[in-house]
Each structure stands twice: as C-alpha cells, then as structure tokens.
Amino acid sequence: MAEFEKSISFDGRDIRLTVGLLAPQAGGSVLIQSGDTTVLVTATRSAAREGVDFLPLTVDYEERLYAAGRIPGGIMRREGRPPEKAILTSRLIDRPLRPLFPSWLRDDLQVVALTMSMDEQVPPDVLAVTGASIATLIAQIPFNGPMAAVRVGLVGDDFIINPTYAEIEAGDLDLIVAGSPDGVIMVEAGANQLPERDIIEAIDFGYEAVRDLIQAQLDLLDELGLKLVQEAPPEPDQTLENYIRDRANQEIKKILAQF
Image (cartoon, rainbow, N blue to C red):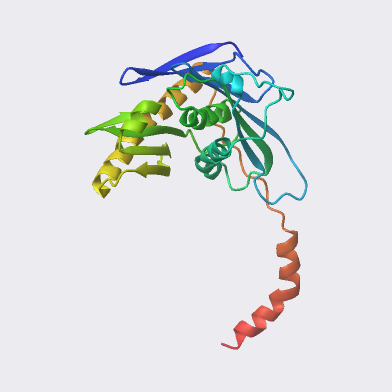
C-alpha cells in the first residue's frame, strides 16, 4: 500500500493519520500522531481454529522507554513487564472495539498499539483507541465500525478536546468517550464533584468530536479505495440441534398433546 496521510483538527490541535509507512506485513497499520506523540497501531487476522466458540481477540498496548528518550541502564537493557498503565490502556482499547465485531466471528485477531514517541504533553491512550479502529478497517476485518475515542477536559467553564497533561491536572474533569456511528459505546471518567448536567454535556461534546473522527476514517477508506467489509455469517452447525430433535421431538409432542 502506498504511503498516504490525512489530518483532522480540533481547536487547532491536529491529529495526523499516516498509512502505508510502517508494518507492511500486518493486515492493517496506521501511525496516528498528535503533537509529538505518535502511536503505531496494527491489526492482524488469521484463520479460525477448530473448536473455538468465542472471539479470540488479543489487544496489546506497549510502551517503550525510548519513546520518551530513555534507554534502560545497568546490566538489564531489555524492557520490563508492562506497567499497570499499559494494562489499563489495553483494556481501554478492548472495551469499545470488541462489541463491534460480528457475534459469529471466530478468527484469531490481534491488535497491537506501540507508542513510538511521547512529548509528555499529549496522552497516547485515546490515539491508540482510534488507531485500533483504523487498523481494523484497513485490514478488511468484518467490523461494525468505524469507532473513535476522544478525551474531554474542563478548564474553567470550557470543555477541551484531547487536553494536555497540564490541562488535565488543572481542570476538574478527565473523561474519555468512545463511540460508533450508532452512538456512545464507552465512557470512562474522573471528576472533581461536577454536577450531572456537566457530565452529560461533556459526553455530548465529546461525541461530536468522535463523529468527526468517524467521518475522517470513512473518508480515508474512500481515498484508499477500500470499503467496509460485510461478510455473510457461516452456516451454523446443525449437529446438536439434530441430535436433540431426534431424541426429544416425539416426547415433547406427547407432553404438549396433553394440554
């Protein structure tokens, strides 16, 4: 796939999408950047395994010390185990992503978000959530998306889309809202005793930005010559139904005939 870039702006803060630059062997990949914070998100699909009766989706968010310009010192120069923040971010990506896959899908899916650089101003977590949707769409995996996420802050009386760490610290609200074209999927928030009406306004404010990101993803697909994938579900296995029908059908009819 040829390299392609697209940008979307919120109050002068750009989110830049770059496709086709890195991870060409993945089913779909995107570099999503805001400020100097850059996250590489990939999505890969393999064939279904025998005997799997659930969606084997793995979401992994990985932070690297080099993203902040640090190299581990001492004898051990390898990265350590994932910190708690990385585990929670993996779950943050998973929660709005998983419900959008068809209920019949049984293929192994892996979504990996790797923080390439951090400027210590823009949090990478909501970028990774939106990037997961874009990578899934590019990988042509059946998906009832697009999906996107933004963070909403409140400084004074003004809501802010994707505030910096300093604005989050100075404000009274840290809310993440994720949604699809059908509505809000997930809300996660911490607040300093805000009234309910402010929380509702923040969700509505954030969802408007989510809709803009969703439209940007649809425009990106058109420019790449791709479409939303709609696959027919496989024929269900009738073995169990036939087994029960053969052994219980006549008995059930006898019982019902008594009424």
